[in-house]
Length: 193
Image (tube, rainbow, N blue to C red; front, side):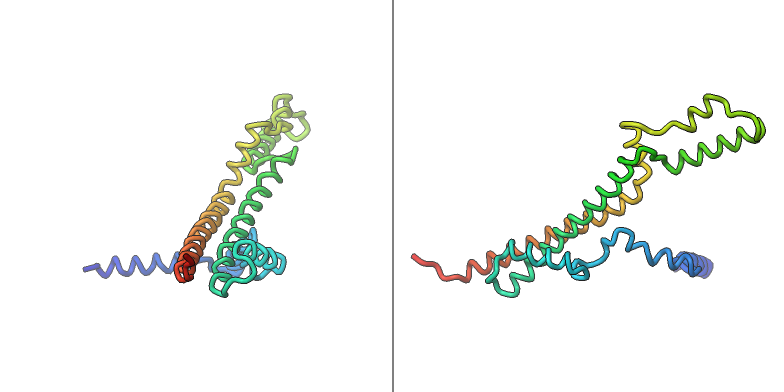
């Protein structure tokens, strides 16, 4: 039996974890799923819908029954979603990799803190020491730049990974259903000897 105190505590905790309370917080949370537009169905975009239909026709052909057409559409939809996720990942990484002035948020904060420290210590009219100027003008290069970008974008990449795993899973189950339907249709056809 749960004590009355524990029940009250659980209810209080549940009330505290029901999502954002302010209009700004709710507005921000409402946009979470739209960041990469990956939560939108391929049916909502006319160009993606055309691509879906073309891919489904490649999978099944033109003169299949409606059930087989629908199963082919499910495979095509998952495949297009998978392509969209991979394209979004490529965009995130390539945009920053090609930026010669890329600087991580953490490094920008570190450089700002150093400038403020130097200004307080040396005064606003004193020149910055050479080693400080060298550090302020440094940019990540080569493997260090790639590692910095991946670390900075880890949360976004993790979200994309979840979308990709869902798309792969949907595609796998759609292919299984399609194969099962194909085998069932083949077993119903009369055999010629």
